[in-house]
Image 1 (tube, rainbow, N blue to C red):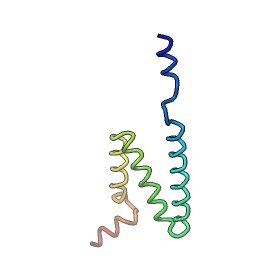
Image 2 (image 1 turned 30 degrees about the horizontal axis):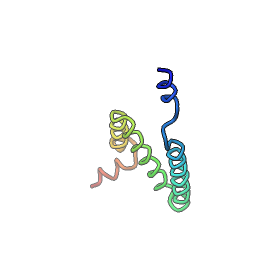
Image 3 (image 1 turned 30 degrees about the vertical axis):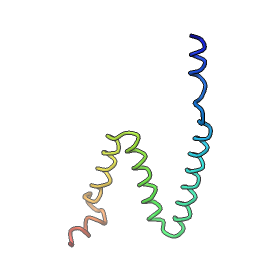
Image 4 (image 1 turned 120 degrees about the vertical axis):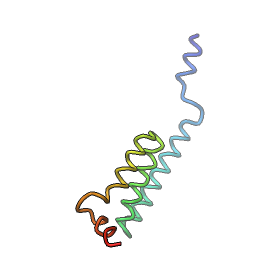
Length: 89
């Protein structure tokens, strides 16, 4: 029984390589968004919000739905610039 407990403590094979890959992907995405922010800061903010939405939706579907509702109905708040544009159409 002690051997089974000792094996359960060991990290799974390939765990370090997977973490290194995730860290490198996050660094590469951060550099890409940073480079994009120099050309268009608005699109960079949109990309960050989009990535955050995807991460939240994959972690917890209910929280992803709440995030989507907040982003979708944000234009209906009084004083938002998009509410005047939709009223003119």
